[in-house]
Image (cartoon, rainbow, N blue to C red; front, side):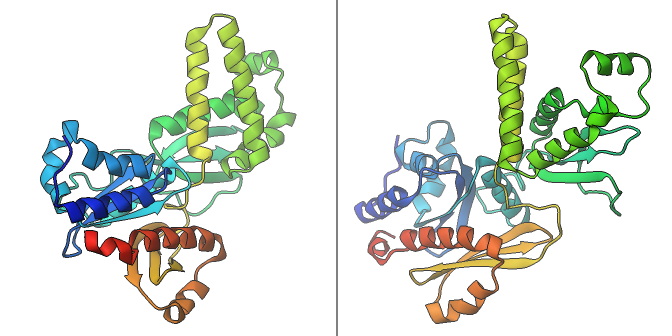
Amino acid sequence: MGTTLGPARNAGISAMIARLPAAPGVYRFRDAAGDVLYIGRATSLRSRVGSYWSGLRDRAHLAPMVARVARIEAVACDSVHEAAWLERTLLTRVLPRWNKTPGGQEVPVCVVLDSRPARPRLSVTHLPVPEPPVAGVEYFGPYLGGRRARLAVHGLTRCLPLGYTGARLRGAELDMARARGVAEADRAAFAGTIGAALRREPEAIARVRAHLELLRDQAARALAFELAAQVNQELTALDWVTCPQRASMLTAADFTACGWSGGILTAFVIRGGQVAAWTQDRCPEAAAAPFLAATPPGWAAWAHRNAILAAALNHPALDAGS
């Protein structure tokens, strides 16, 4: 059953939902006083947000909250992974009344690429990253979901068996390396491709994906369906760890990324490498200029795109419905 509101409110909410993109992102509901009621994430913003007014089903307990929503705000993300991180970082710092879990359920991890000659390996570890840095050891991430990260590692090492390129292999490990046609001389190439894929370099990702797809299809043709399913899960996990994700970083950076459009200044405050706050305020273009100039170049397009979305959702034509 849908939520019943006054005709003007229903019209305003419907107009806001229609302006949401069918893209991953994070949404925020505010009441008439401007207080945040709820923060959530979506694979498709328009579909997910619209579902609150088209039938709550097993979320009937949210009906009182939905009846109070006067404004919808949203951030369009470049991936579902980015949306998951953004929701987590926001909820870790502020927990609105209708949210129950600070930070979400997924475990944050990173992937460790150890290319030192003795025992090269690829592994998953929990945060924080140890200090000081060690030569020959790189950390990638962070990622949400230990299981996904481990599946991605399995997929990468299935294609690029880095562990069998070590200088101290003995017994069964040495026999396995010979059986797979792998030697110490492959270590640098394997580590280089793995590192490039984890740095989200398209060519390296495409190479690993093509190899995994070939192995999956070969397994399916051989009726090894369990193996085919496992490799397919590894492909999905590889996509998770290599997709765009900027809401959380391993570097402890502090800055503010801003975008402006239609009289709305949208700001993302990054503290310790994570998006700590997301604000939207009315602001003349001239006053916004210093904030835009201080935005790191790598964040400018993303922030501007979300400022355009903020302006669309705050369009004066919608005010009567609020």
